[in-house]
Amino acid sequence: MTKIEAKRKTSKKSIRRIKLFPLDLLFSKYIKTKANFTCEYCGAKPAKQGLHCSHFVGRRYRNTRWLEENCACLCFACHNLMHDFPAIHKSFFVQRIGSEGVERLENLARSGNKPDLVLMKNELTEKLRRLEA
Image (cartoon, rainbow, N blue to C red):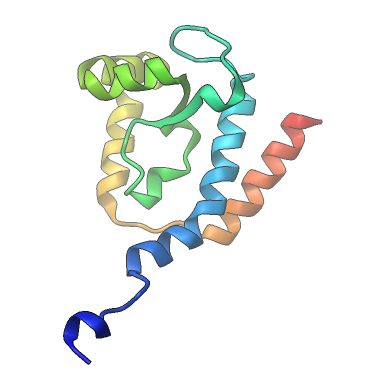
């Protein structure tokens, strides 16, 4: 068997994705429900599938990935706008949470702390249950 044939069939990245994906879905549903399925930038009410959970600090930083202040419910067009123009994205979040809040998120992302995923799931489930009631 060659090295290529012996190569792992499932990458570490996909294993990680499988583990985090349900929590990401739950968090996205919570953010959209909290925003009443409305884009927080332009105010549009597209179909539920047309809304995105936009992160100010990228999703790769787990310690800020599931924080409410790090996310906004945006329609597809506004989400693309934010990615294409980072200055607009930053000013939008500065307006939402203040410059101190943005700085706190950026520092927290670099801190390297890891959240308790089970606790996070339980908290999100409870918050979503209260919102939907």
